[in-house]
Amino acid sequence: MSITVKDVAKKAGVATSTVSRVINDHPNISDETKKNVRKVMAELGYTPNLAARNLGKKISSTLGVILPPLDSKERIGNPFHLETIEAINEESRHYGMSVAIASARNFDTLLSHVERMHRQKQVDGFILTYSDKSDPVIRYLLEQEVPFTLIGQPYMDEDKIVYVDNDNQLLGKQATEYLISNGHERILFASNITHENLYFERFFGYQKALMIADLPVFPAATFESPNDYVEFEKTLKETQATAIVVIDDLFAVRMMQLVDLADYRVPEDISIISFNNSIFATLIHPYLTSIDIDIPSLGKIATQRLMDQLQQKQQNSARVVIPHRLIKRESVMRANKERT
Image (tube, rainbow, N blue to C red):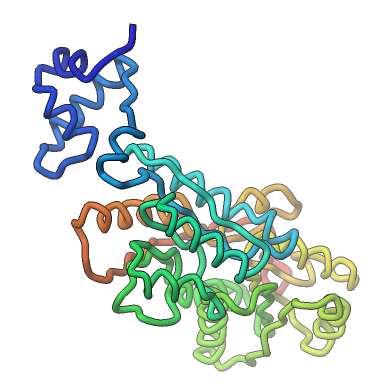
């Protein structure tokens, strides 16, 4: 026998109209009543007929998650994306929402996917998981007045965008300061991305820390072509670097390989610090010193802010900054060879 709205209403001690309003997350229903009715729904195993509900409301009950162009194996394999999707999916369930993914290998294809999802009303809004200066998607969402939140700091129209971010400039600064506190004076910054805002912000932070300490600032060691990898050994020798700030954990693993190929050891010869505190930080040896950016909170709060827009609880732009913390492991050693 199938469970109906009447069954839920009877056990919860409320009217059937109240159950319907809870299903639709009506703002006039108290949080206590919503919690009680949802508990009864779970106990009875009641599943709302979302298709029928959405037909009348002209909504899809689906949130779109837009990933950056997955144009390399490192992009595809980066755990940041999977962790973000999992956090968004988990939070969406609390609102009775599903998640649809928009991904592609380039911006043109990605934009066409997003346009189709919007025009066919496959989703009610989007969560953009990156901020890239070449991105046409964010312009489309703004022009079409599509509800969305951004994970990252926007390049433009900050006053029109709801976004959730870490203080990436502070992350870069504190990562560099940690190396300086361990006696390092010749420090490189390495990245395999050069268009996303987090690269600029973290690199700015790196530069700021070195300038304040009156230490040499080197150009970023960027890796966009095979030749960049070949030239890196020459960069290490010319700069005489003893430490490297790396854009994220996944690329830090690659950097450790390059350092080894150049006949240097981590951390005895070169210390490495990175960001995200992902699974990769403890899958290799030495374990990576990394800054935890709290990816679950990024995804969770981005979802909440998008739902605020969809429920018309929030109309204006807003910025939420997620705290971070340094996780000290084995890949950083004092420049005088005393392990930290």
